[in-house]
Length: 442
Ligand SMILES: *[C@@H]1O[C@H](CO)[C@@H](O)[C@H](O)[C@H]1NC(C)=O
Ligand SMILES: *[C@@H]1O[C@H](CO)[C@@H](O)[C@H](O)[C@H]1NC(C)=O
Image 1 (cartoon, helix red, strand yellow):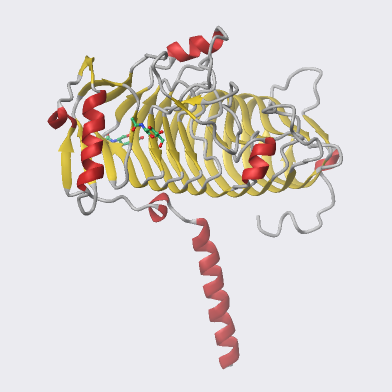
Image 2 (image 1 turned 180 degrees about the horizontal axis):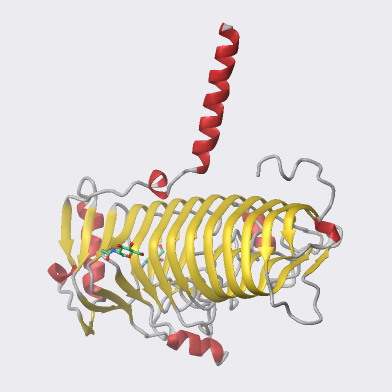
């Protein structure tokens, strides 16, 4: 009797903790903190007239935060107004607070924009060989940094950069709007990010990063304006976002071919929830740079409309690495070229030194409760010869047409998986045998 009661209690506790695990909220990863020391950009000569270049004010204010080192950190207040500035660096223990109506606007002086070394996990700039333009707002090796406020705007004025890219006259890779490198305990919340020159938010080699209540806007034809790209980073939480941009809304990455393999830093423990938006590319993407590995990702309650691809897992030969233990659930997709795409032939290589024998491992991918309307092709799953994608588990999936003429709704090769309640009926490779591994934890 006593033994049984004990067993029941143990089972109950185990179940409770397993359940609690799924319910990690962003605020548990990095709690919001209050700063007692507050300064305003206007104390440092900042002028929000949209014309004055405020680089000196930003640098001096942040220098003051860094060197006075107030206990509990400092808050830098940006009042309503348009503050034009060149790029600047953040420091540890600071909050950048944008009031309602505050705009931090990047200058467009591409000729004097400073350069940074390439990331070691990429070996070169992502779009051009050599270095890359330093990110507009950068935190390098910082901790406890918050960018927040009352939904003020950070405007990258990216059109000049997009045009350089379109004309093929760019010499180096374009700058990100916000980047954190080698940093931890970061929050970006309640801001609007507009017209980024390249990717909007790029946490790389970071841990404990929260991005929530952020609106990201860029025209659908703006090149490479990815929303949030966690890269070789762990414990990342992205929630309650609206994104309308010109490339993947969220893309999890971890380095590029032989450089990413040598650097060997994975992206893991990433939660994405309540994301709404629209893009000509993917809603939720993993890759194509994933050489350091990507694992333990949960994406749920995602609403996508007017999309290229709803969910896109992408890799290539030469990448090595892995994508595993990924769960996507409760995704609604309206009007898309493709609902689900998992492909092993996507994305280019940094150079011709990649190892063609470095084959990525894609396995243990669960997708459940995915609904779609006006989906031209529900599924395209194209594994790699000699490295098939395995244990792809689909359940409760309804992707309705009208479908593209003369195309099979599901096209598959080099993949193994199982399906439960999937409509339209998927390819035979994904019907498989219900060996129990797919559906035990769904
Ligand atoms: C900003 O940080 C980068 C990376 O640490 C550094 O190379 C650069 O010199 C810093 N820029 C300024 C103006 O301090
Ligand atoms: C800012 O925008 C978010 C949505 O991203 C909204 O939930 C919040 O109420 C807004 N805050 C203010 C102060 O307007």
